[in-house]
Image (cartoon, rainbow, N blue to C red):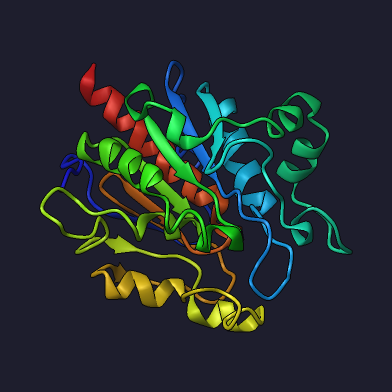
Length: 258
């Protein structure tokens, strides 16, 4: 397994050190979203806005170039619950919705199958329930994750985004997550949102079945884990921590390469 041996596995549960998001100017980060917009139950789904917006702007503000792709290409579907409702939207979501250039670009994303993974320095997978259908079954995504991981480049996913890791196997046939510390949307959280019967599998169970060393915090609390170049976050509230841990991994990699 490709890992940055200069860094020990890192866990962040609450808050984040002020130096956690270093400048990564000159790097190119690929974000891959779901294209799936309808659950088998008939409920509308898609990407969860906070899990896309928060990393996107953290990466851009840190100096990285960011490309957003999707599984099929074309418009990125948003889970309507993540962009409307009575609760105040996170600042990053408000920024995204007001950012016409980015919102226009999200209507015409490239397909991940059309991209060369080796042109990117890291990959990030935001969640949303749609990922449980198409990220989990995309061979094109799996190959690009494998290409980056094999070179020690950061691979990160938050909430349901780790579904995109479940289809990835290393050259020796072992699951990508086997023996690695991971987290993601938990069984308990899925039950609390009432969708444990709507998804094709429970993410926590699947990651454990694949040999992942699953670690969880309290329901809906910020929690992210870094194990070498692999970074995972538990839920929407973990979006910032997950992105910052990935930025740290990316920064350290470039410092070592200098």
